[in-house]
Amino acid sequence: MNDILSLLSFDFFRNALLAATLTSVIAGIVGSYIVARRSVFISGGITHASFGGMGIAYFFGFPPFMGAALFAIGSSLGIEWASRKAGIREDSAIAILWSLGMAIGIIFLFLTPGYTPNLMGFLFGDILTVKISDLIGLLIASIIIIALVSIFYEAILSTAFDSEFASTSGLPVTVVRYSASVVIAITIVLSIKVMGIILVLSLFTIPPTAANLFSKNLKSIMFGSVIISLAGSICGLIIAYYFDLPSGATIIFTLTGFYIILRIFKAIKIK
Amino acid sequence: MQTILSLENIVAGYESKEVLKDVNLKVCHGDFIGIIGPNGGGKTTLLKTILGLISPFEGTISKSDGLNIGYLPQVNSIDKSFPITVKEVVLSGRLSSNNWWKKPDKAQLEKVDELLAFVGMQDYKSTAIGELSGGQMQRIFLCRALISDPQLLVLDEPNTYVDKSFEENLYNLLGELNSKMAILLVSHDVGTVSSIVKSIACVNGGLHYHASNKISNEVLKAYNCPIEIVTHGTVPHRVLKNHHS
Image (tube, rainbow over all chains, first blue to last red):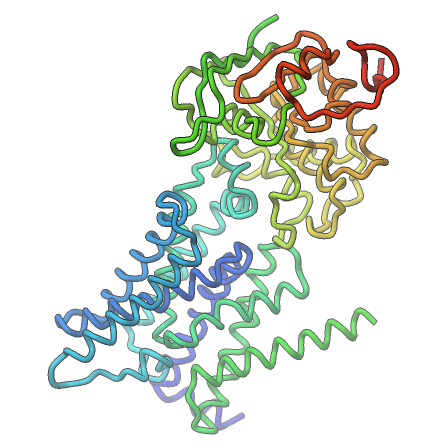
């Protein structure tokens, strides 16, 4: 225990804990929405497409986060538009953007002269190098997401559940859906810093799936996901530190472990 | 009778395919119109046009000022594993273009209890939607359509997924509701429709309106509706007995 407390005296570890906490908040809330709407695959597409933006940003020397955010937002709106208006099947649109984004990223990183950025950091996350600016971004996103969800909860729920009915009642379904796409894209990009492109999807899906075992109500699934994600991230972080393992991957293992334990717990409770 | 909705010379469809051709329909306060017709004849397109989900290529739709339409979709269009409770589903029906950011008030919360009692589902308020049977879900969607006090209720194939035990009950409820609102009921089940509605519209590309609920041989022939009716006696006749009156 003392060891853990002494860890807190390190700046990098304090920052990592804060990053894990804030990421759990945004990923728990947004992930619950993604899972409820069955758009996990869309999120995968957005995540991987953002890699293209990172590559271009590196090549031209502007902040990789900005490039990733632009690509993520662009691809999330593109998928929404392509499947509704352009008559392209949604899964095909996702697959095209998914691999195209990765291809662009790889080409531009390859072309970037001299210094090769830490590719592993992008792919698997690097929570121990989180900067204050990353934390501020995460904090602002958490506040905005909590505010949006608490104010517009019913409209969000109604359009996600039955968008056709919602539009017959005159709800601004298109605005809600496109805004949700933008929020999902930004949340994913912010979480990439902690989890990496490859692993971020599990942070959005395991906690809501676990919370869904005990609740059939979106609001409590959101709340439960934040708690489960928080517990998993902090435990994972500590385990990763002590056993000198990659933090993102360890967090995913811990979350999966939590899910299995909760599932067994539920099975026993039912008996 | 006051006209609440009228369609004039409507041509509608998808992309370049015209499904409805030159359709005219007037819905007045107190109407109970059954919409029948073969698959692909345009029943759904007509509904979507009335609900504003698609815009017609030609023609005009006029609605009376502030016309509020309650819509009961087909149950199979719903994601049954979506995490939402009965109470939340019913409450979602109160949202409209001018209050979608507002929280429900006390009167609306009481209305939920009232409606659930009306359809006999008062014990299911906190139940997840996925745990209900098709017929129970149908009743919840009826409550959702009714919570905004519509002047027009539009039902899409309400008898497809309803358990037989509740079917008659549903028609009695509709009869009761008809004193307060006009009803448009789409169904492929002609027998049922003719027994409960006041008038019939047959949609097969065009629309032919019959001011009574009797189905004549002429209707069946002229509009080519694939209807099989086992009957004794001569046409025109009533296919089923009225559940009420």
